[in-house]
Length: 185
Image 1: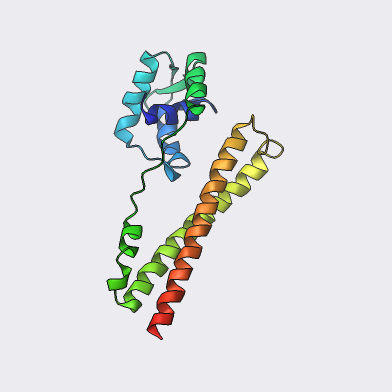
Image 2: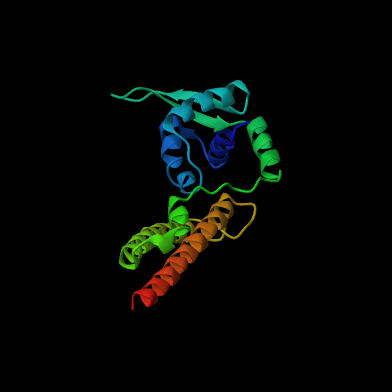
């Protein structure tokens, strides 16, 4: 199965969602660490339904089209459980800024400082988003977010990796700026 399939099953393991809600959740929180295009989601939901991993119910709405609400089946939960237990391949990193830093020695120090500071600002903003989500999880999932059998726990530990990554990236950018400023002096 495609990784997208498991992303969808992971969301539906938490609760039932409409296709629109799934699309939104694929932007955040899933989009923070894995991307899918809108055009991929609905065909994959249909495929998962054909496989018996999800079902849907049509919910009538007033003044808007009816919506399909998807539910994870027992077979879908078992498929997800098996997948989670399998080893993963190392991630392939495609980071344009990291590629630029590989040739940073060619840049004018003042221009390089501006580029690095801009990158640091982007990561500071993302860290703020993550910190807000962390507070939400700790409040909403109080008593559950540190229990390994809870979806809050899984969301929390994933988020903590994101926070750690952003903090490290910000520190790395600061170190680069310090070195470039020393060079400019």
